[in-house]
Structure formats: structure tokens, C-alpha cells
Length: 258
Image (cartoon, rainbow, N blue to C red; front, top):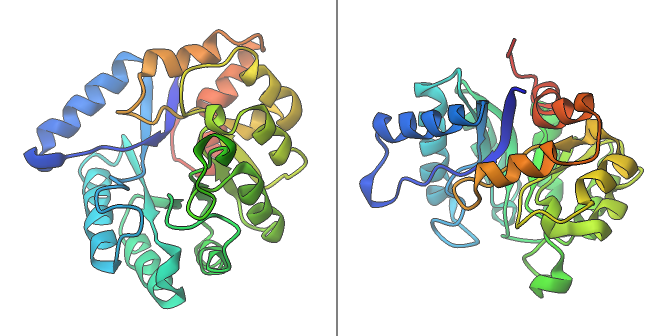
């Protein structure tokens, strides 16, 4: 089965960004039949609340990867909604003017119930971009100010039914997160985050529909053999596995992949 990884973070670190490093990422992905990766940026490089200049630096790295290898990398615009409407719109406009950007990425500057999320929704509507929101159960994390619990990500989806939203980290949101997302046609989940949990993929397919589940690894934090195996080993049909691993992300991001 061909695979698209909707959740990756190329981190260049002290070695800097070089074509050779990206080629190693591509070679790694192809060993697992990953034919395309969605790049979310080194989102914690400057802490949870980067300023405008720091966002530009992160997004420039992402843009560089998508520009250098456009057949393999697609980019998401990383934002800090707390910077306000003007800053959000300006950065999205700057990025989408470049090739390769097809969505918005949010991390832990604020939780998804915060009023500043209206700026993100405006940008998503204006440029027809889905929003990938970092989500995790704050019952386990304990930081409701910055972390988006699945309930707050679901609230963002209900407030903005015309915006497509990806609730990241299926393992992090767990069975409760699946139930929070249930019944929201504009809300998807990606399968990244933590070790596999028995029955969770099947539960998501049952309650959300297999067409609302997207494969994601959180590379380099997670291992692809494990994150792919949680889908291949699930007790669902081969057609549903292919939707999760490839078709759903290709459709949602309108990726020109044959």
C-alpha cells in the first residue's frame, strides 16, 4: 500500500538545512512505501509561543523543503494565533504565495477554545486551507491553558463547520477523543502520538468512519514501522486501511498524486 504521512517534523538543528539531509528523510520514507510527507515545521524550536520573526524562520525552512523536493514534501503554515489577526493573515498570505503550502499547523500557543482562534478560522476560509491542531488529553497532560484537549478541538470544529480540521494524535486523545470528534463531518483525526493501543484504530473507524482517519507518524519522534503497523494490523478492511494510509490525506489536501 502507498502511504502519505500527514504529520512529520524535519528538524535540522546545528547541522543546518542541507539537501543531503532531506534526501536521507526521503530514503527513509521510501523504505516504508511512504510516497509523500506533509511537513509541519520544527514547531518547538523557539518554545510554545514564537514571535513573528521566529515563525517566519520556521516556515522558511518548511518552504525550502517543499520547494527543493516538491514531489515528496507538502508544507503547512505554522502559526501562533496569539499574535493577532494581522500577524496571522500576513504570515499565511506570505506562505501561500509560495508553492507547496496546503494547510495550517497549530501547536501549543493556546488551546483551541481561545477567542484568538477566530483569526485562524478566517485565514482557513480565505485561503481554503485545512487546520491541523495539536491535541492531547489534558487529563493526562494537565495544562489546559496551552494544550488543546480533544473537547476544545471539537469545539473549534463546531464553531467553524465550514473549516476542515485535523485533530492530531489519536493515541494522545484516546477513546474519549474519538467520541468528542464523533458526528462532526469537518473534523478528522491523525493517528500519530505514542505507542499503539489495541482496538483504537478500529474504534475510530467505527465511530468516525475510516474516511476521517489519516495516517501520521510524528517523525522523527516516532518510528514509522510502529505507526504504520498500528493500521496494517488493525481489524478493518484492506480498503479502509488504504483510505487511512493514503486516500484520505490525498483528498483532504488536494495532493496531485497519481
